[in-house]
Amino acid sequence: MNDLNRLQQLCPPPEPSHSPMEWAAVERALGTQLPSDYKELVEHYGTGSFKGFLSILQPNAAHEALDIVKVTPSARDAVEKMSEWVEPPCPPRQLQPVAVTSNGDDVFWLMDPPENPDSWKVTVNDLDSEEWFIFDGHLTAFLLGFCTNDVVVPSFPDDLLEKPASFTPTP
Image (cartoon, rainbow, N blue to C red; front, side, top):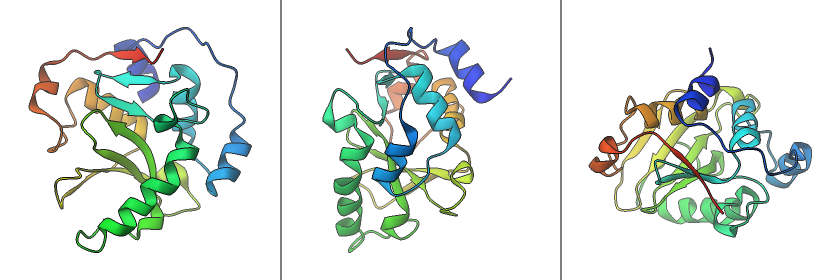
C-alpha cells in the first residue's frame, strides 16, 4: 500500500467535484514539471485542509490564496527578500510553494534536482524564524506523517498533536 492509499484510509477524501486538471498547462504556467504524487493528491482531494491547519496549493483553487499558479510569484519574491537576512536551504528560485498553514507558515518543494520532481523534498519555513524544517521525502509522505504525528514540524503548534487526522474540503 502506498502513502496516498494510507492517507486516504486515514483521511477519506470527498467525492470528486472537479474535472481532471490540465497538468500540462499548469506546468507550463509554473515553468516546471510537478511531482506525480502531488498530481494524484490534488485529483483525489481537491481544495481543503488537513487537521484544519495545512492547505495544499493547487491550480484553479476557488480561493486565490490557495492557487499554486497565482501564489508562486509572490511566494518566491518573499523568499528572495527574506534571503537577505535568512539563508534558505537552496537558491530561492529552486523553491516551489506547495502548501500554506493557517498560522502563516509556507511549505515548499526543494526543487533539487529540477528535472526530477518525484525526488523533491519538502521544506517548511516559519516566517518568525530563521529555521527551515526539511523533510526527506515526497509531499504525500509528509502529509501522512503530519496526520499521524510521525512528522513533527517544530514551528507548527503543539496542539496539532492532539487533533485527529482529518481532511476538510474548502467550500
